[in-house]
Every structure is written in C-alpha cells, then in structure tokens.
Amino acid sequence: MAVVPALSTQCVIWFGKPKRHERAALGAAGWQVRAARSDDGIGLRAGDTVVGLLDLRDGSHGCLDRLERLAREHDYLSLLAVVPAATGPSPTRHPILDHCAAILTAPLDVPRLIQALGRLVREPRVDPAHALGSLIGASPPMRDIHATIRKFAPVDLPVLITGDTGTGKDVAARVLHELSARRRARFAAVNCGALAPNLVQSELFGHERGAFTGANARRAGLFETADGGTVFLDEIGDLPLEAQTNLLRVLQDHSVQRVGSHESIPVDVRVLAATNRDLEAAVAAGKFREDLFYRLNVLRLHMPPLRERGADILLLASHFLNAYRDKNPTRARAFSSSAQQAMLGFAWPGHVRELINRVQRAAVIAEGELIAPEELGLCGHPPEPAGDGALDTARESAERETILNCLRESGFNISETARRLKVSRVTIYRLCRKHALDLARLR
Ligand SMILES: Nc1ncnc2c1ncn2[C@@H]1O[C@H](COP(=O)(O)OP(=O)(O)OP(=O)(O)O)[C@@H](O)[C@H]1O
Ligand SMILES: [Mg+2]
Image (cartoon, helix red, strand yellow):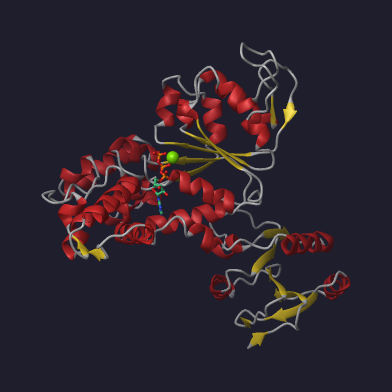
C-alpha cells in the first residue's frame, strides 16, 4: 500500500502511534500526520514536503530492517526519530538511526519536533549517496568508510583522518563537510606543512597591525574567515608546537587570539585534521602535544590502502579513464584483461593518486582501444606482494602465530597491532576472522 499525501502538503508519515495531542499540535503547525505501517511503501509527489518519523517509543523494533530498506530506497526522504531516552550510541543501536536528520528522545517534546521539522523544510537534505559518490568504492573497507562518514558528518566534533598519501583523505574531509549542517559555510583547507614557519600563527589566527615587521594592516586568520564552517588542517603533524598551543585554545574555548593581541575572538568552526604520519609516535617523541592529539582524535577515520580495496581498483581505473576521455582525445576505451589482472596484483604504494597517474599516462600513449599492462607501466611486475608487510612472507601458521603474539603484546589493541605489523586495522580484523581468532573471547 502506498501512502500518498495530497498535493503540495506538508506531511509527516508517522511510523508508529502518534498521540491525539501530537496530531493536533502538528496539524495546528501546518503538518498533516499520516500513520503508516512498517511495510507501507511511500508515494512521493513533486512539490510535497514529506518527512518520515520513526517512533520507537513503544520499543517495537521488529520493523526496523524493513524501514531501513525503505529509507535507503528513498534516500531523499528526510527522517526523524523519536527514541526512548535510554537509546544512546550503543552496540544495539540500529543502523537506520544513521539515516535520521534528528533524533529526539521520549517523552516527546512536540514544540521541539515542530522546530526540527521546520529546519528540515528550510534545509532540504543533501543526498548522502550523491556526496559520497565522490569517494568511489564498493569494497567492504570502502563501504565501512562510507558508513562511518555518514555517522561522523552530522556530529560537530573534530575528526582525525589518517591513511597513506593518496588514499583519499582530502576527498573524505570534503564529503564530511558536505554532509554536515555547515555545508553552506566555508570549507577552509590549509596544508600545515606548506605554511612558512614564521607565518603559521598569522595565517591561522590572524594578526594585528604592527604585530611584526611587515604587518601593515590588521588581518583575520583562516579560523575567523571560516566562521560557521569547517577548517581542514592537512598534514597536521607538521604544525609547529607554538601553533599547536593556539589550536588547542580554539578547540577548548572556541576562540582565537590574533598575533599581537590578547583579545579572544569567538569562532564557530568544526576542525577536521589529516595526517599520513604516525601522530602517536610524534606524541611519544615530544613533537606533537598529547592534549591536542586527544582533542583532535575524538573521531578517527582511517583510509584503507588501495591494495585492500579489491575490485574497487578496476572501478576507479575505469572512472579515471572515462574522466580523461571526457576531456581529451584518446584511442583507449577500456583495459585488457591482462591489464586488469596486473592492476589487481599490484601493490599500489602511491594508492589512488598513483592509479590516476598511471591511467592518464596509459591513456596518452595507448596504441589500441584496450590499454595493455605495459602501457600502465605494470609489465614485468610480478604481482607484487599484496602489501601486508611482514605478514606476506609468513606461512599460514606462522601468520596466525605472528598476529596472536602481536595482539597479546599490544593488549589486544587493534590499532597498535596494526601499527606494529604495518598493516591496516581492516587487515587485522580480516586476519582474525581468517584464523578464527575471537577477539572478544581472547580479551
Ligand atoms: N575513493 C576515491 N574516489 C575517487 N577519487 C579518489 C578517491 N580517493 C582518492 N581520490 C583521488 O585521488 C587523489 C588523491 O586523493 P587525496 O588528495 O584525497 O589523497 P590524500 O590521502 O589527501 O593524500 P596526501 O596524504 O598526499 O594529501 C585525488 O585526485 C582524489 O580526487
Ligand atoms: Mg591530502
């Protein structure tokens, strides 16, 4: 059965049981309420404003999987949820809550619900699938990344994005911004490693006239100019210690002090930071402030190596070839099967950036319609080690032994084990599954 609201109405499709006074209050605020069962379809008409409301107050969670499918099919449908007060971010939290633009707790505060509905009308939802489309990938590790980004984007907390160079940290930061409530404000990116050491403070926090030689006028820094938006601090590991202290102030007090002034200027920014360096090691070496590390590392997004993304390699290669073909003449239309095999077997030390470079070069020099391995510069490369570092050479049992020992030594800390073995966390999880190492039990 399809629930089809009348033309050009504002309609709440209520999955659950609205109370009489709730209906009445919403009606007075211009919202029609339609009750729907979980297996109802949703018929949308152009011009209608339809918001789905998941009412989980009575604790009946049986329909959630079906609702999640429905929400996925109707990605543009804005969803709100009302949950019992105890439902927090716990392991039992259902994934459908990640589709919800707002989560209200019971007892339901109807004016707040009306406010939340109003906000959704004023700020039509960005289609997450569209925003995430710039981060191509359908492999399990990339599906995890997409799911994590959906969770992290609406939360106004710092995110530390880690991963090797060329794995897509910049792209991920942009998507986080696009999917956040700050998307209409600035996304101000700065490469901390590229700033002149004597100008870092002034670039980020601004300066007063006469603060230093050459400061002829007062100047607002990046944080001030990005007020209301997102600041992306790339190569955060290269930030000088002095600037780290000031950054800590921004994160703690939400204010900046321009160089040459003691006045605190309030700023409202979300900070995203990225690094391809081992920040934990930098902290241990006294090169990075520990307190700042913990502030930045509230939410962590680790971009997996390209070689762990399986068939994504071919998906990305075709995407970059098509993008090249859109702008340039080339004979190349696709990849030969041996080229595909070579790409799947290669270790990709430069990750996605290297893939782009190899595909573009191949497109330039291609002799025929199908790109050959040698045109990608992959001929004569015996399939390189899959990149699991020390693990590659270990035989099965030795591999299990290695993992288990390392897990024990690191107190079953996955990140630490991954770091020691120079593989990603995803690989550790995969190997634990492969060798039937039950982490929960072992811990
Ligand atoms: N999943 C992806 N889908 C599409 N393009 C991608 C993806 N990942 C990376 N790219 C592209 O690959 C290139 C490198 O990505 P990006 O600059 O985000 O990497 P990075 O991790 O920030 O690298 P670095 O550490 O060197 O700054 C960019 O051109 C980016 O658009
Ligand atoms: Mg980058």
